[in-house]
Length: 142
Image 1 (tube, rainbow, N blue to C red):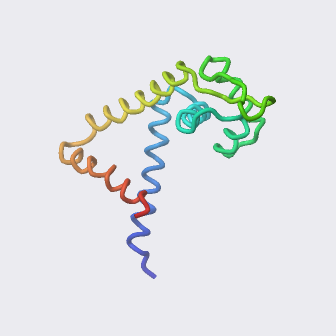
Image 2: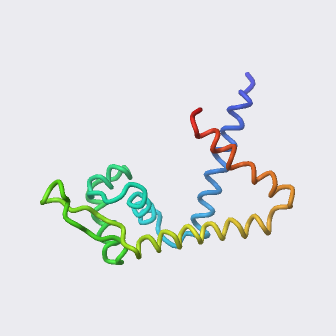
């Protein structure tokens, strides 16, 4: 029985994207993934309780408490009293946290740009330029 050509493309794409993401992370990340993901969640979603952060990341409260404590010790997040529950605290992104997240993204972007510039021909760069639009169309659900 022959495989569905679209499924073959889907599997090749899944594998390639996974390898690409792992390679960029190992070569360019300036933050450990756990810290970067937590900071990104705060940037996207705004102040969160530890329980909310844990739910977003799909980890246990205890694990998120450790991550938040590490980030707080580095000055990348802060705590403020929750307006809804005086016993709870909201974890907030500090200016230093925003700067660390942006530095991490810049390092990734620069690594990818360097790889594109040194490993691809002009024709390949032109083809690659269409990929984000195609991926956006696939992920739009429309």
